[in-house]
Image 1: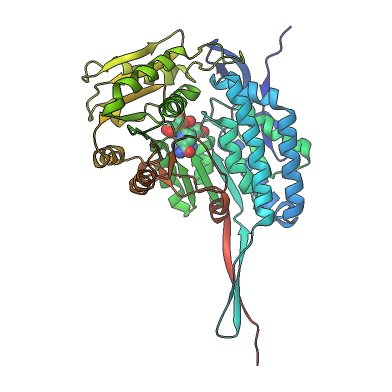
Image 2 (image 1 turned 180 degrees about the vertical axis):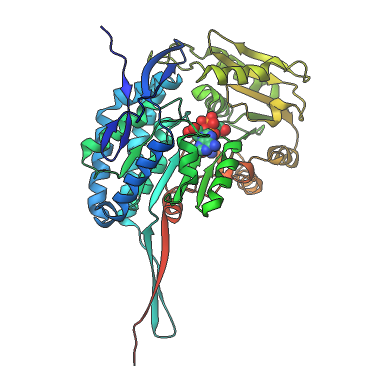
Length: 480
Ligand code: NAD
């Protein structure tokens, strides 16, 4: 007899049900059937978790144990995650339909988050400032306190750990709220932290919704010292307003409508391959995806023909099949939203070159051409496997097109002209530029967006700045 898996909250070192026993189900978007039950928390469970994290921070060993001991525990958690790759990857794949091979990659990256930030914190150096007055100043990075990461569903485990790992490495305690559509991997992470020997209350996980639920409780509670959020721009605005009441610092990683620019001198195979990955990986449900593709006119027709052929060749199927490249959208609600953009393509004056709806909640890799620049498909984040392709003539023209959006998360450009690569990179109003590649990350580099794509940067020293209170200590060294 099959037993339905159950995922509880992880609060104060224990896995528990909600006080009133409420549960919700999580749905596999390929089968469109529920596959697990999850404890449904609310303000009460958020309160319990914040209290546990507060106690662990104010009285427990975690902030006081020193970087080396924390480093060992964080590495142990990374090791446990790797040895549970099958379970963690299948959890994310079942929860949101991402192909298993990509979920396995996410688990490796999530484990690396713990290793990298543990090592980074241990090895970080701080400034010492000799002063002309016979004093010297030095900088201490004190842990901020209780951190509340609020995560989206599209890279559940990977983005949760991108926040949790530096927060813990710098001595904070955490109350993590995973997205309601992808609760399973976060619960497994919490179980593994207990197994790794983390002190009680250091890493708490509370399941629930945003408004009037766990998310809102976290963002309005004065016992929370940092809120780090990844999700939609509209939600980011609500969270920033909520946090402002307590003057709680927020880091916001929000939506994108990113330009992908292919110049006529680009190495064509490379540009086509990356452009495909950029918009169709994870069925386009990536904040960084190159959803506005600008191709210089001399190569427009050839590029488009190759791009369409590759899009049509992607292997669509059950995400749990290791050979599947492309799965369904994460939820019925999200499918309906993306479908809405396809329904109006003709009315808005454009044309579908390839793609459209597939089985169930699948939207096939879809390429739109002739879309007017003021159409919703060009202006709004679709967050699905839908790309708008436009020809352009000059560098100035394409820079203006690329920058012509309130978003500014990233941009990609493909060219063999070194001067142009540097020149255009400097002119793009975004947080990250990729030249002749896409999605490549270095955890030391700043990550974040400008404009409607967010506030702040995380990564390397930027994570240290956010998850600590830098303190200047000024000492007299010469009393003569
Ligand atoms: P979402 O904003 O709907 O939800 C994200 C999280 O916020 C969920 O955990 C949700 O429960 C919670 N939430 C919702 N309302 C809340 C409220 N009022 N108070 C507190 N918490 C609340 O986003 P999503 O649909 O899960 O994710 C998709 C979006 O995330 C896209 O816009 C995408 O571009 C963006 N994203 C950005 C990045 C980045 O790094 N910039 C990365 C991934 C995804």
